[in-house]
Amino acid sequence: MSIKYKFPENFWWGSATSGPQSEGRFNKKHDSVFDHWFDIEPEAFFNGVGPNVASNFYNSHKEDLKLIKEIGLNSFRTSIQWTRLIKDFETGEVDEDGVRFYNEVIDECIENDLLPVMNLHHFDLPVELYDKYGGWESKHVVDLFVIFARKCFELFGDRVKHWTTFNEPMVIVEGEYLYQFHYPKIVDGRKAVQVMFNLNLASAKVIEAYKEMGFHKEGGQIGIVLNLTPAYPRSNNDEDTMASNIADSYFNTSFLEPAVKGNFPKILLDILEQDGVIWQATEKELEIIKNNTVDFLGVNYYQPRRVKAKESEFDESKGWMPDKYFDNYEMPGRRMNPYRGWEIYPQCMYDIAINLRDNYDNIPWYISENGMGVEGEEKYINEYGIIEDDYRIDFYKEHLEYLHKGISEGSNCFGYHTWTPIDCWSWSNAYKNRYGFIAVDLATQKKTIKKSGRWIKEVAQNNGF
Ligand code: BGP
Image (tube, rainbow, N blue to C red):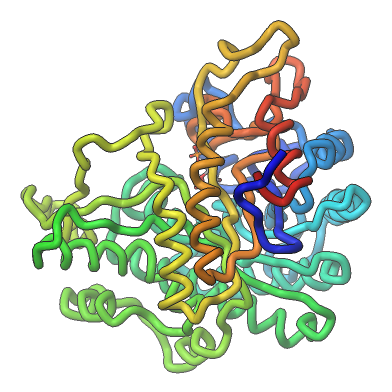
């Protein structure tokens, strides 16, 4: 087979999941905001399916990681749940079963030649910390998160050499404080802005702790996973361009700039100051953000953001919202994934690669999630019981082609992780849309490799396709 798209040496071919979406709640001593939301409002979840069992990774990690090896991957990201590892959030006292579980997962990754990438927060704030302190609105919670992170480094840092502080912190801001898709479903633009700052601060403080503990000397690296949804204006006129720049600063560079460069985008600061909604921050905190930038970046990419100048009436009744400055734009003729309702635009992989090369010091980065959620995949099962997910293979190929173009023009990308190795629990969408290389039968927890799982194996073996 001739290889048209060859990737750099030692490229990460992998896939990502998270603790709350794969493990199930078995033996967990605390509830996250999602556990709690499901307990009080199960009807908010597709088919009433919650996180209780998920894909049973707590019990089947041994077999699951073997299957992941079997499809040829060389790296794997999951997250350590704060609510599983820690018994006492204030002191950092650990839960012994949590320690045992994550030790096993890490050791099994290594045994299966899977480089473990461990993330510290994937939307799974302990609900007690919300009830007691207002969650990420509170700087005390920021400090408790650092206690948790230090524990993780202390316990697992000898074997885990790649850490990320957060997965998609912007989604916490949007889901919990603006658009009501994460518990507690608040609409409060002012709190959202404070949470945005506190999450940036938490990430920097965790990086500071990691440095202080000396892990870099042992080859350790720490980064962050951001969902970049590059904003494209409807047209090149000044109004559309300005609207798009503002949206980009709120949704993307609000985390990208501090993570990579240690400061906040001027356009965002100007607007927040002018509107009187700027966050509370001390000089010392700004210093910590300045001095503790990431070693590498993970980029989750699913869809672009399309923006036009504000045309609709801004609804003042909700108070300050970033939507004051732009409207979302539906581009005529856009390609859609109808199940998830997200636009498919693979060219964006190239644009991200070039943006990071030119505007972010060509920082080492990887695609930490990319994928296509599809409903009703059982209709593609062939006579041998295998899901023939050619649409997924095509989706990955197209995205990889544009990524390859970015790399061949000098962008410093070292890997490609898909979402997700084994079908997992998609928050309030539960198991509606499936993303995996490996299917899960929810009734039996039987796991079966899909056609895309065989395909990625070849790609990983050939380091290209
Ligand atoms: C990302 C999250 C993942 C995952 C994925 C797919 O935003 O990091 O946790 O869920 O999106 O999205 P969804 O599950 O909502 O379809």
